[in-house]
Length: 66
Image 1 (cartoon, rainbow, N blue to C red):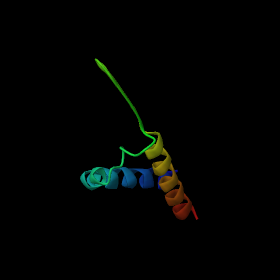
Image 2: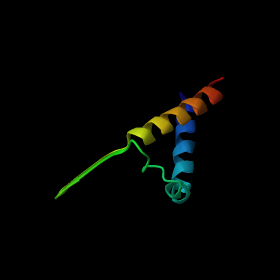
Image 3: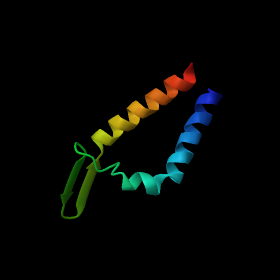
Image 4: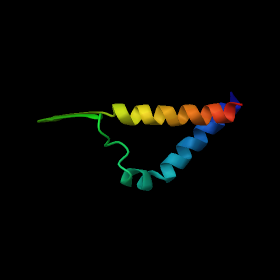
């Protein structure tokens, strides 16, 4: 459990530090992300981005889990 929490913390820290670089890659504005904008309302649901992040995190956890 401790190893998992430390890994999650490191991933969040690295993501936060690299956010300016990641935003230039277009992460969060991929095809498949749902954006609805109406007057006085906006909804953003990053479906594709969440799938990619899930795959990357799964690979990282499987790599460190063994």
